[in-house]
Length: 401
Image 1 (tube, rainbow, N blue to C red):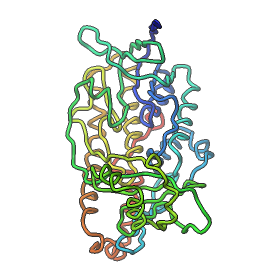
Image 2 (cartoon, rainbow, N blue to C red; image 1 turned 120 degrees about the vertical axis):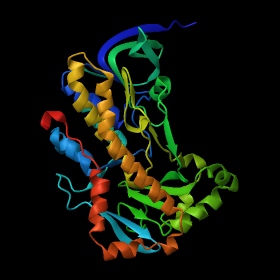
Image 3 (cartoon, rainbow, N blue to C red; image 1 turned 60 degrees about the vertical axis):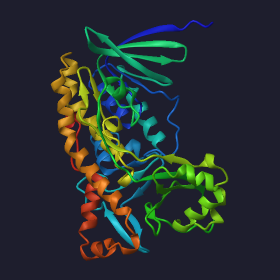
Image 4 (cartoon, rainbow, N blue to C red; image 1 turned 90 degrees about the vertical axis):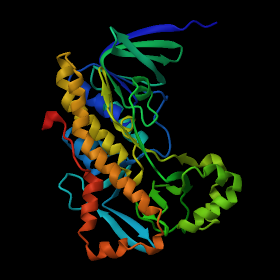
């Protein structure tokens, strides 16, 4: 029987989850001279169909950090406007060209490239450690207070002592569960099935955000392939599988700009990835020694692709409020609560809009008057551009405020 070894580490902060929020916060803490350990349960960042939109608000943060030029050298596509098709009519839903920021576009970039970039930039700081293939198990307690985490890494048991534990481990957060943090779950009536289509000669010319005639299909240009999303009523994926792949391809073809014959590329259910849409948020994001941010604190719908960018804004706010207390080794619950207070309004407001938009999508798109409204009031596309591109409250790294 193989013996498990035990490893011990010390840090100012242990961050659970190597996604956008976790790595951004890790970068900011390490840049400030803190010792930070980020643990990520996967061996790499190579997973399909994650949030791959980098909004102008995030690009502005990268600009302030001096990382924008290097980031934009990575392969990406730019969208200055988001186009939609509603009730058979093509309209510009959001226009980013008048935003008061450095980059007036959404950058579509595979999330693994963005995360690898953040990890590489963070590694320049001596206080930063990223542990992949490392799974959070539980908290370490001392005198009833959280003072670190235990984790599994290959055949090792890790004990990481830290002043603060950050839960940035997504909508199925283990940190949130172990901390006993509770919240509210809001209804979501649809799920999304994601898949790829390799590009072929004769494919239609599609914009970055083309949506089908029933507004339940989206296509993103990934260079040599199309990333496609098809929305379905919540909980019906099993029934669709039971009906067979041919029937499902016919459903997709009815909404997609691709023919049923073109969709023959989908030859196996394994090529399809179900995203169960969930909108929720914690009542309290923190307890002594623990703070949740990003999807761990508030799971978002994919509407507008804003989840990643809200998570990054959370990370910047957390760094702004917590760097000094961590440097002084005096982190109090009131410091953690400031992060939630700062980020509560943009979270609630964004979720409110997502819930309203989801309920509107359930109505017949044939009767939609949105194209007429936007044509009558063209300034709305700039309003939507600001809400999607910048959100309800932008954060700026404190070192450059």
